[in-house]
Image (cartoon, rainbow, N blue to C red; front, side):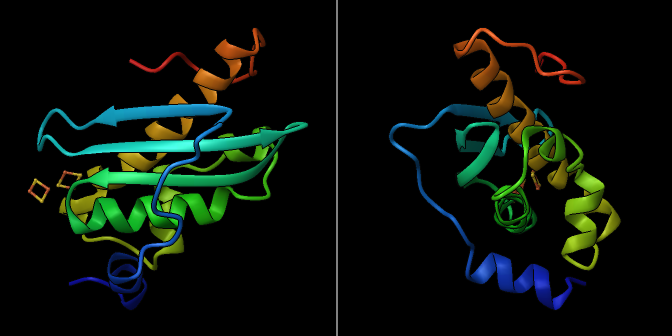
Length: 132
Ligand code: FES
Ligand code: FES
């Protein structure tokens, strides 16, 4: 049912934890299942230099958070905005259809952390919408 990559990122999640002096923090919850994801980003001159996460949720949510933090480190804000739940799922060699909603948490928490960063710095990030 799960790809080897999903199992690997679930068993050995990368970048678990928090960043104390994070540039932006985003927390999102999934109303359907109650799972929660929190993402911390460190941003330096427009580049995401570090990312950490804490996920209270299912295996697919843990695996997608892990993969999303891996994908986002080293990217510019503009590139980070292009990370979608589909690209995270693809990087994991796919997710079962019933688990696709879990990967949405990863996309939304990244966006929420970027929004927080923009708000703190009084800047506008083009293409970024306010998280609901
Ligand atoms: Fe129970 Fe996600 S709802 S593991
Ligand atoms: Fe809730 Fe996966 S079941 S995020």
